[in-house]
View (cartoon, rainbow, N blue to C red):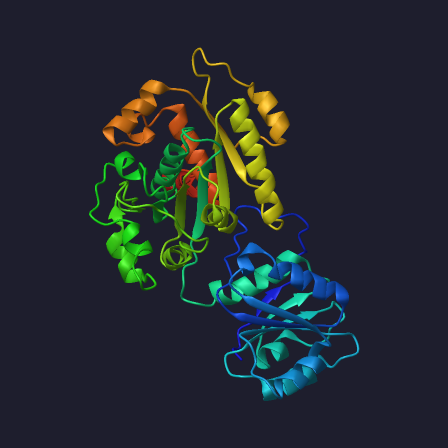
Length: 422
């Protein structure tokens, strides 16, 4: 067992995590929990149903440390053991006995109580990797298991942002590409845009790129894509922004299974801090899986009845499928188009029951010029209000605060006065 403990005495949060409380997906590992109470067992099972646990294999048993010790006398230990202690147990003695039957490399998370008297130094000596004070919540379990592999391993676990339109032609791709540009430029985060509309994708046009290779070279190859392959397929748009383009050809039919893109996403997560998915407007197994598996979701809609219905349906489905995540966000695009009847913004908000992350006004000249020149909105007009909206969206989706100019030292005025007197 690895001796690296992370103390966690924070108050349990009843709310879903905020944007900056990022919890990385759990890798393909086996986790076995031995619980003393039904309440704890139910919480651990709920964590196992979360999207971040989709690749892990979880089993939950009753009996605490005694059951774990008995079980591992005759079977190999998993990657992670979750062990709930009881008031009547001797935690240190139990850990000593568990260590005698535990395989090297197994990580241990202990769920204790405020009445535990075992000092943290002794827990560390016995190989405890994390100690959580009960009663626990679902997010405590997710955060603990995720941190074992995202904080202690030399692996970058990239944040995935998915952008999808509530209806075709609402400008979801334009929003995705401009937000990704702002993340790379204004947030200074290395980012990748993945154009998932293989037949009709426009990311190559928007970024003025014509790469020889694209996502089809990864999806249709027989072997699992690795980091070296993905690096070869990426087109460099800026110093910090790369593009995994769509072939945008009709010489084949692009039908995929639900897990078709998993290997691509997993590989890029290992090397890229931020991944923006430009998801086409369709409802299939793989689009649903990509949306549910993303860390942040933005639904782009126009202010009309079909968009309102579709946006509400998508939001309801994703909220139900992601109970431990912040609800998906949405933005209103092309608002105020001349001579077009529109649903008022306040009525749209009332029906959706949440405010949009942004309300982007219609500006045919600005967006048309950017699209025809292969430019971003900020390249056409950096001071335009819409350019600033994309930066604000980038800040919220990445959990980064507003960029500020560096301030001078607080002691500066005092030092200047002293120099003047000298």
